[in-house]
Amino acid sequence: MNRHPFPFRKIYGYPFMLALITACGLFSALFGDGLWDGLSWIALAVPLVVALWKYTRAIEASWPWRRKEVKRRQ
Image (cartoon, rainbow, N blue to C red; front, side, top):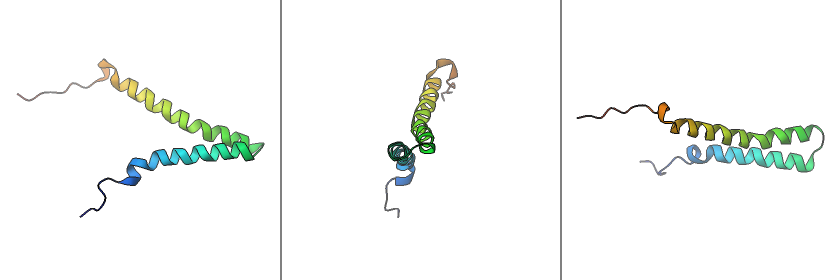
């Protein structure tokens, strides 16, 4: 019998990974200089790119001509 009703890693894995990348970007911007600034720009851009990617996929899925027709049984 499964003791856990939902897989913790599957639900919270990606948000936790994005939080770690963001924290690394913030700390590298705060404590580093030179190359670390470039790393912080990249690390802080990752959550924005992911959010825009998911947003555009949601918008495209809501377009009426992109929806697949569902055949109903009679």
